[in-house]
Length: 206
Image (cartoon, rainbow, N blue to C red; front, side, top):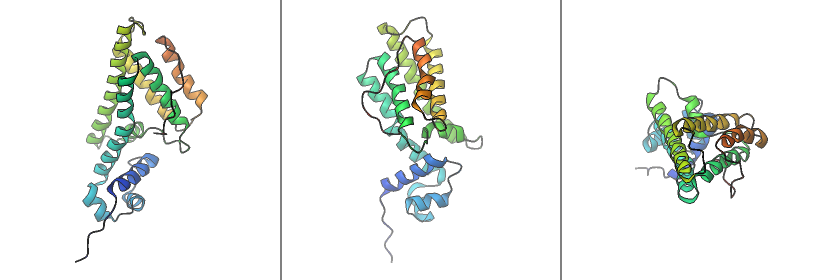
């Protein structure tokens, strides 16, 4: 009996993630995935399930290394007002340092999700809600510290910050020049009494 084909599951998932990130969930075919991952279609299904299951695994891995990591790092290492400033500075840096102009995989998935796939829409909506919750917690903490005016409603500000972040990442796919992206963030931070800055260290293009 022939031995089952061995492969590096992490490398295969990374290849699938790259394919989805570049083209989107809907536009990436199973054939393109098998070619990118170096797998046959049966091997792909046996290891990762169907295309949607593979996409959700790839998205989850992406978020663990990007958005979730950033939220945890900033809340644990920075004062709340600086967490907001550095978060957006990193977003600009990630956008301008990606020569492929892929944007954010989560935001791309939000634009790509169809009404016919409620599970995918729910996953994406939950992650965007996580980001908004981070913004609201950080605004409340900054207000308690006296570094953001107490006159602003944290729920309203968090919705505004989420909108700015989504818009920034969509814009970065077409107009990824630093001046434009920084200009899209600066007035919002200024309204909160904050000044834009550069991230304290280089960030990868995710």
